[in-house]
Length: 548
Image 1 (cartoon, rainbow, N blue to C red):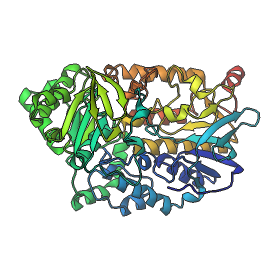
Image 2: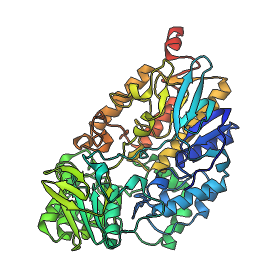
Image 3: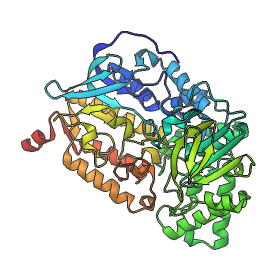
Image 4: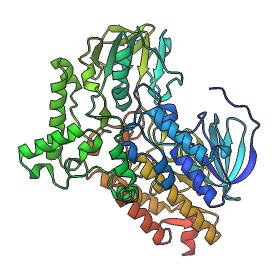
């Protein structure tokens, strides 16, 4: 898409918003409602955030369509019609554009623009934000709505630049699409993106070789055209259902079973799992209430899914490689698929285990593993993202005392509530590390964060306050709490991107808050009701502490 030429912007605003995904879009809408002047910058050429970039074949949301939409405006949720139970990327992007047009958001948005620097001026108590287009804007507040999965992890295999064919990354897919007809394709990675893309690529390509390091648990989506009666059941009861979702553990209505897996007979347990498997989707993990806490209970779910994989995949050797081992189900992001495991029964699909024999190099003609070259016309890198922190630490964000955010977070991200970080006044994060974010329905968490930020800005205005930031003590306590809660579960047993394990050299810190969306909301509300407990308002924490 051609970049629109424009003159650099030099202006003052109340609010700078970085990111035009669902978080940035809603933040702009709320800012306008408060009478604040705001500007939005985004590297992309349009709205949509992760749904703008992730256009790979088969890209689809793993939250049901009726729950993955804005709830703040009843007219929006009533008028939009989803065509499938689980929406694909093109439809979600159409929805984002429809909302942007409906709310007239684009007039305050500037695309094809990368924010390079955000520097806080302690004297003026304002942020100076610079971009690669020569923009220099000043704002009282800066909101980072940069998304949790927006910085693709680029492969660092030896010889990657020597490959003579075409290379693609699932997180930056060509907008015009890719035709693999008649081609031999190598797919590196078997995470969520690959699990969605591989079946589609295999139906088109001459041959596909999948290079797998870690097999993943995946549940069939059972996707289908949206039944009219199902859509009506949601739209007739949206207020009640949305209220319930806001207090649910994941922000998704899953019909949870409030019984432990070991509290029922083997036959009853198997029947519950079979029913969840047949209905499809990530609600499988709500089959029993202790699957993420109790190893014995989790083992029963893990064994069930492994048995399903072995029943589907006809080649016993492939089935054994595809059956996850060494970590509990649900402790890596559980995947939702359409005919993923069945794809390995195709004669044009091979599977290579690169855990036991890692990839040695990318050659001019393919992928070298164990001294063997697997030739390919094209390579698809499904190697994931530098999740939750990658985009933020790539911007030169400089706080009150001249410290950069990347330096502060060298040993892992530190925030208070996932909303702010000490030493960076008036800098807010939407679904930042230390909040439920990627462990939740992102639409629910986005709305909760944006509403909290907007209400905070309104409260600051009423107080005629100019500055807010967390105290160091509050941040330290929250970081400790996030990790304490994480270690009451099975999650830390997995080397997942929740822990930053997919990025070499990245500190192993559990980044999202696993206490639950409802619990987290109650904590945030209590902080506000207590007069923004844990925050210093209108003065740096050291000054506020001295005045007490």
